[in-house]
Length: 319
Length: 251
Image (cartoon, rainbow over all chains, first blue to last red; front, side):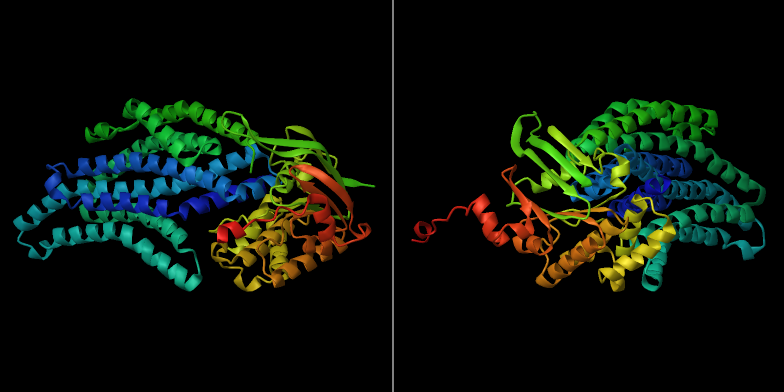
């Protein structure tokens, strides 16, 4: 049974991550986040806060759009292309098939989440480092040692290189993997994006630690404070994915998209509890107990959607 | 005789969103298929063959009558473990390669990865796709996709193989290959149920047949005992169809 379940999960995650939608959304989110740092005119002196705000809101908005549309597409494609027929003739129950698809969607959401969230952390940390760089610049100017005068510029270049790498390196890696090892291009981009973004966070922190010494603690603290805030945003992504996946078993694409939009509008007031950028801006942090209680609160909704989806799947005629 | 498939008074009516009946696709069909037979479910387009097959496979719920597969309901996992299915159109995930497709369906059959690997290699060679095993099936021609689908149906080494229009859309060479394969599988002891509206294909491979028309069973018989060609027998039972009056249109 485990082998059957994992075959469906794997194929679903592979399918979603290879989709142009995944490309488009991760790339758009990463690009917006990356170039936010360089739009000084719109920052009103609060570069770091703006980076965090854009990072977390991108995660929320792009995350929900991604969760809804990838769920709709994977389920409707199974039904409309007929692959569902082939799968349901095999010895796996319909309910297990649906849950395996849901797990596949969850895996693809994790890849999306880690990629976009890591990019947000890189950008926010980079923006938070700006005053430290300026301070370094003043110190250099006051000191007679001119050999360090170019350091801020160098740091700026390194930061830009990091940000651009998040976008360009995955494509270059994917091209090499595709050309020389016959790996799928889309899949390679997705995983290279993930690896580059996560590695970027660690590299960024290591360089900050080396350059700023003890003052880098501010940056570490910010990165650590962003983690629970980001995790919190994973709850609505999961709930929307389960909702869309369940409805897609029974209804057509447009109807499910419309229902998801209505749910989004209805849930907007609740999102205030999930979106904690303001608290972060005030130097606060989100306790993990709050994240845990948010997940616990989301579980009954997710379970109810998945249960409904499994029932829809059990009862539907496959033509 | 050991019957693998038993259908009794099977009925199916399709309905619209408001549950109003739109078409009565199958009306009281019954037949049985014994172990080792190659059984042809024949009939013109729209006669209810595919709907009958889908009820047999548990994909559609019958409105009446009963279906037994290996003596079990068609939704039973134990029955489906012994089943292979080739649908009318080759439904494949376009992003998977031919090898990955077989691996996916092997996984669905509950095979371990070593067995999947071995059988995939054998099947890809058998259907002549070993050279393109690493290519995505989305770029395959119809004939190649059909071969991959056939290999997918066989990966679990089923006792019963259900083929829905197996030669549909294939060129004469591929058609001949499929027919040869079906005969070889039958010789190896596999029970085969195939639907077709191509009578020459059915005549070549089937031992017994049942003819459906407008959702009803017209007749059932053995291939060697009809005393005429299947085509003549079929037209006699189902009707010649209407002649189109094109002369008026062409004036």
